[in-house]
Length: 115
Length: 111
Image 1: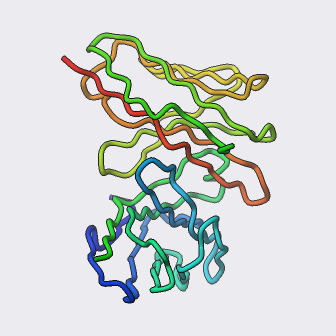
Image 2: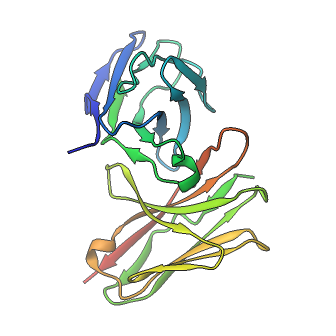
């Protein structure tokens, strides 16, 4: 079955450590996205990528980095520079016209807690 | 002002009730509108698109009012399984077509 796989589902880290969240899709989608969700706030766009080897900052990119070396993969690194990293992170993908149709396919999310 | 605003709820309704949510958006250039559903601690999933002429999918009806810049979602004959958070989503149409998510309206359907 096609879909998006995020790992790990739960992650704990100490302050000052970088962590990388994995996102893999087998939907053959061109575009991939990373969102962050905090209680009482809507999903906020961190980074997005429309094609391989290209990505752009979203609204809250500071303290995060990404890569898009393969179409299927879009990992997100939460660096120690991110001031408040505890959140629910969601990876999504869409076909070329995905955002026009509004259909994003989300992974199950990764819940990061900084201790 | 937030680009997309929703009443967070929760809306507590009995099974069989009809419930409606509104969502307002600030960018008059927005072209596309959607409702997503998110279950507790799960990922959002597309529920339905919202067309200018309104659209219906079973018990769910979505409407768009461009003049007043709001969209609505009506759920008839509520089921226990409708309990979830409903996210209003607007395509902001600024260069790369960015989807802006509302904070969501929580619905609790009780027996």
